[in-house]
Length: 148
Image (cartoon, rainbow, N blue to C red; front, side, top):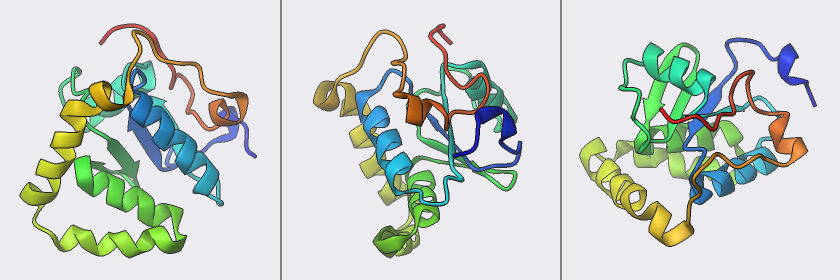
C-alpha cells in the first residue's frame, strides 16, 4: 500500500462527512473493494476537504453531499456514488446505468437518505479516527475535527 505522502495530487478522492457513521461505513467498504488502492479520502471538515469544496465552487458548509473528484472534475450526490462504484469495479459496475435515470429523480432518493443518515446510522460530534489501514488512504490534511 502506498504511503500518504507518495500519493499523486491527481488521484481520485472521495470527500465524506467525517462525522457520519454511514460515510465511515462507506469508506470501509471502498477500502475493502478498491483493489487498485487508487481511491483516496478526505473529510469535509478537514483542510483538504475544504480545499476541494472551494475548488468545486461549493459552499464551505456543504456537508450533506458525497463528493467524488477524478481527473479534474467534481461529482456530487448520486452521480458521485455511481462513478465511484464504477471505479471500484466488479459487479458494482452493474449500477452505473442508473446514471441514465434523470438526476432530479436519483438525487431525490439520495437527499432522502442524506437527510436521515444521522437518525438511521448515527453520527458523532467530531471526525472519528479511522483504523490504520484506512488512515493510510486519506490524503494529506484529509482528517479534521474543526468546525467548518
